[in-house]
Length: 313
Image (cartoon, rainbow, N blue to C red; front, side, top):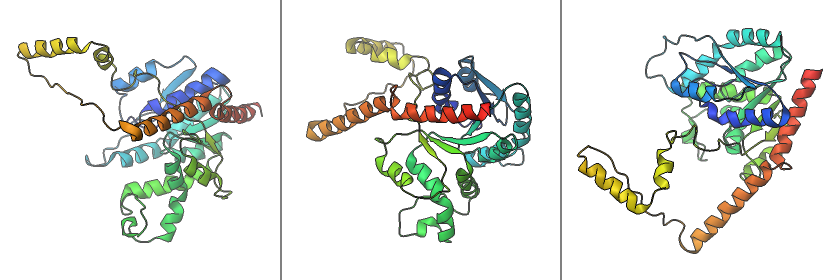
């Protein structure tokens, strides 16, 4: 279950494709929305594999919200009002096909109740960092420990205003993280060794199983900023030809904005070499964990086995 149209589907697509390609699952996206799908949404969804279906849940009206209501509040309220539609979608899907698991983003933990009604495992897919996951898991305890604003604490804990609706809803969903059957984290040990080890050594039995399935990324620029391919085209041109292009634009007497990027001096000298070496090591580590015998693939396989056993019960 993906969030509203403010939430990009890109982050969960590589995860879904892993299960389609390597574990032969069929995937269905149930998408809450407060209006018609956007053009960008349609482009992304139309490009999906045949094994990945989509269901747009019936739109809900948020007319009661003012125009200046922030995005987070809109997302939280939108999803909370879609549970009945999600329940109906579950009824239709389970009537023809067994459902192995429900995976939601960090806004969708209310859907756990629906999954429980149908005896389906529930998971949270977190595309962000293990540091954010650690914050979510510890937020309920922080809220109990401190009655003042977090900004008044001596420690550096940066959180939303505790008086805001966003904070209240974030706290609410963070408590639900521990109710999940597992948390699928888009990270790997070499990327965030300290935070990941801290999560593993926490010793709290109420914390859900954490599966490191990253780094899952969208390859290429099909859904990025360079959809038209203009930037790639420019990068492949000779410098002299770009000078001619600039001259041509100027002679056309049309208004245009020409952006010139200066050379990056950050990575010059010994410090730059060390930084480059660290990045190279990190890239190699990422490739290794995503390889056939890598830890991320093993984590995905472990999740897949649990999901398959759920179907065959």
